[in-house]
Image (cartoon, rainbow, N blue to C red):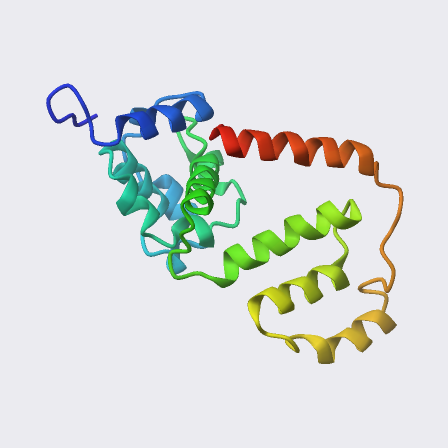
Length: 189
């Protein structure tokens, strides 16, 4: 790892990420297999290996300025191809959490809006409820009638259900969400 004196910039933030990952980022030797296999790399402002490199150099702000972690679909192709067993998907997820914490969107406002709508829908219904997700996402994104014309056909073909499915252990889910909120406040996530 390139160090400036004995320290890299943002060393505390990088150390926190490495603790969560369970391995040092310096393991990456920039072979590029993660980026070559990434199905979303063509839409990223910086491919996965460059994001890792920014972090190796302590350039957290530069990594957060990219859209890559919002575009990442968490398919794990990058991690499967990595000869050094780096969990690139986890790095992208950590950057998403950092961006949420800092209130950043990297110009991808619709992605974090959908992410929040998805999590809120699961918190309310105990599982994914597509009509609820569509309504909540449309309300919070300001696209009130987006996809509305498709709903009757999807209902008729059984692609989505009018009422949410039951059976979720809501008490357990509320405990999980409460614990996650504590971790977020502590900065553990």
